[in-house]
Amino acid sequence: NFDTFEISLQLLNGDDESKIDGLQILSNFFLYGIQEILILFPADGIIKVLLEILSGNKNQAVLNLAAECIRNYSEASQGALLSLINNNFVKIALRSEERRVGK
Image (spheres, rainbow, N blue to C red):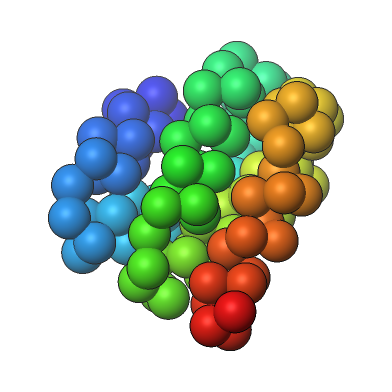
């Protein structure tokens, strides 16, 4: 429901523990959400938040969950795929992977 979605987005603005909680909620929401409800959410805004986390966080658990959210959302929503393309997902993902392996 919308309240769960709103709470999870608020958690993404907190510390890493809050981000983990919010990302877990979002990931499950995208995985088990109903297509008719998911299309009501602003894909571009959600993807931008997830990409900011992916590009700016160093906590591996947070990065893994952000990637899981992106995967689940992109499988559930065509709008998410378009937003990923429009927001330079490939470039951000490559930079994130370089940081992860220490390049």
